[in-house]
Amino acid sequence: MNKSILKAVQRREFLMTIPPWLAASCLSVYALSRQEASQAILSLPEELTASELEAVGKSVLAKDLENYFGKGYSCAESMLMVGLRFLKKPEDLVWIAAGFGGGILHRETCGFLTAGIMNLGLAASRLNMERKEAKDWNKQKVNEYWAWWISQAPLRCADIRKEGTSSGVCRRLGLLAAAKIEEMILPVTRSS
Image (cartoon, rainbow, N blue to C red; front, side, top):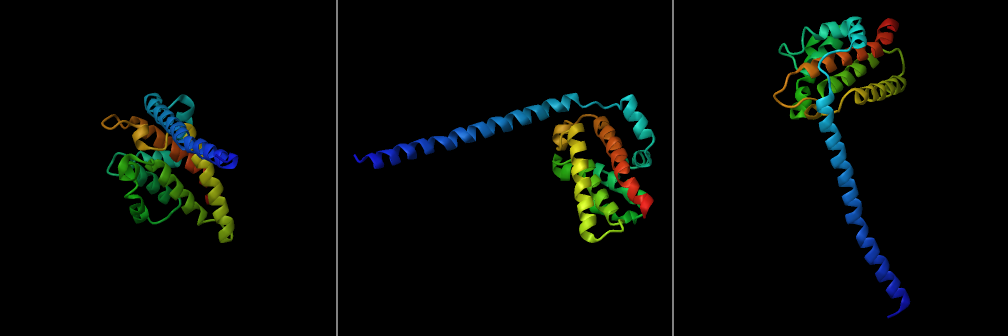
């Protein structure tokens, strides 16, 4: 057999061994991240720490959230509602968040995260900037909020709270998220 043909066959056989190995390593990383997320469920507290309580106590949005969350409003609706009220926008816009509660109704991305991002967009609309500048501001704030969120909790409702358990962990995250969003949009409300 010609040496160049033999090398081509050997190379092809070698390359054919890579995809299963690569797939197996990706699946193991995915399995580990899912396992870590499942363990995070057990470690998320329901009660605010003393420093968290202090931050939440200073937040208008967090105080207002108590009027909505768990009182006929989903996580997303309650978060958007407090933003609408704070930014003096029409409250009937809360319907925008109707399909985002409960992790987009499928225990996926948390409504406090998605509606927090909606509030950042509403705040960007109040900036006295060109559209591109306002979009850049919004992008920077969304990235900041996202980084803050993943330092606090998983993205998915199913990983934050097991079905059928107390909503205390959700209430705590909602209060913290409301205080964080207020901190981020307060400069916009002062300048407009």
